[in-house]
Image 1 (cartoon, protein in one colour):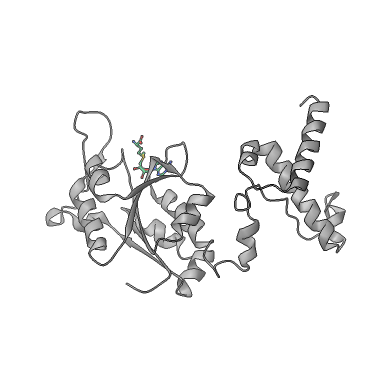
Image 2: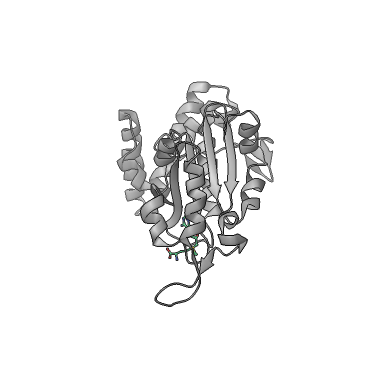
Length: 252
Ligand code: SAM
């Protein structure tokens, strides 16, 4: 164990997925700089007499298999014995992850992410060994590893120094309460499609105003629910009111 700012341990039957994830991009850089440690632990290493058996049929009948208590509990206990840790189970039945929850999770020094497989894990593990349950959304994946990677990626990019500029995360969708503005890069024109002229003007104030209007109009069109909680200035509210009037006039 190290004194890294943020430590993640993924309890998984497929550690190779997590190893591949932490070997690229922002996550790899954060690990190399010692800001983050990503480890895995395989419940299969905690099976009785090395049988390798981690699942069994569900009591009461029905399709599929259920991950057994003993290997999972032993894996989690071995982590807790090494120091304080918060243990989260990735499950479609958990609290839905959003940007503000990821912000809260950055404060956890050692986050253990338990990835289920098959029909899920024995409920007694959830009752006794799990501190929180996290969901990626209202859909079902075949394993918790993708959800664990999503959680780690979302947290790591919020940590100071992870991104090229810490301002990147601040202007991201949801962080500012709105969706982000559209982005463009070179060339100025491609296949007859120009970049909006204001972005080439060099006028910083006009660019900021254009971007804010973009955030507001995109959010109004795509995710109006976000406007209820977004912090809007009086000027923002006036822009939204004008956009809504225009929409009404067009009968949208
Ligand atoms: N039978 C379970 C149910 O209906 O709630 C779903 C089991 S799913 C096929 C197998 C594993 O994938 C789960 O144990 C969980 O770890 C993971 N998983 C599936 N969907 C997920 C989601 N939306 N968010 C987080 N983890 C998910």
